[in-house]
Image (cartoon, rainbow, N blue to C red; front, side, top):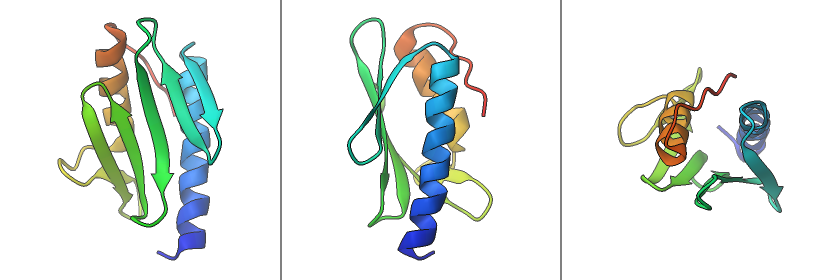
Length: 104
């Protein structure tokens, strides 16, 4: 996938993620460069961004750092093959200490 195609695909996904966190009533801000910063009630943060050089979406949470690569249909974890949205729900819920329902 070329860089322009990746950036368009990643930007569209990041916009969906931003909307889902907002709909879940979580504090999310878009930082320069399209970096999403989610802040939880305890002050902890989750950072979600695209990494153009690797053609991946990266997620940094309290549980660690995770990388997701598009397989032509969806974003899949490079270490565990977990789908991005499944991971976001799991990671956000763990960090919030309660179930976080994120809808695409």
